[in-house]
Image (cartoon, rainbow, N blue to C red; front, side, top):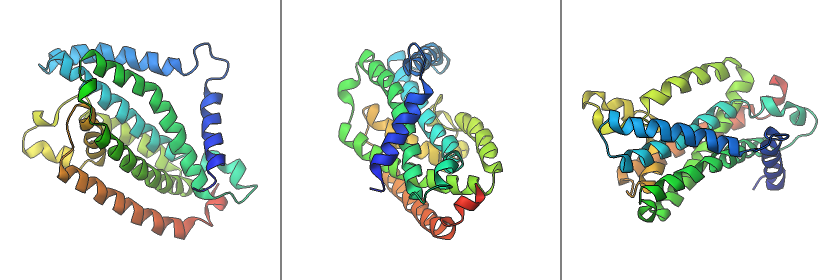
Length: 249
């Protein structure tokens, strides 16, 4: 893989630098996320009339995964902009900085993944997790994430408004993606909010195995289709702009 030692070291160093001189370090992420999930999860179970043993794991997994998707999109816009010091000095492989961003976001997500496992254990659902389906969904999600980060990194390097626009869009996306609510609560006419939402697609793909369900063949097929489309866009864009990125920084 492209300069894997470089992007692994840089991604790990980004995480370590973020929590340098703090008392609890990355534990703050876990504590903050755990408090929010427990507080809203118990209230949401009563608001939406679901058993806490089902709704809390559902919301917990959705919240952690959506936070991961949001971080990939927001930080993906800064992939090349935040690495201008490296790109202006040495012709590093551009994809090394893409993998650096994905690796960093994945490490930070794993801090909150501990909460998901704890909630599943509390609800008695840890033994029902389909680990094989989860592994496949994770691999597909990471591949899609790499394409998305590369595409957005190139766009944001050329058009700086992309970063601000996507930041606002992700705030709205939180409410139109089934994180707090269940798709079955929508009317048939409103189901398009879920069907045309790629975030909802990958959320369902990765959350279903955690909830003891196997994603449907339709979900797998749609996810593979999205990855292929992203791959085509990425290769077209990468060939067109890879030599121009350094001049845009």
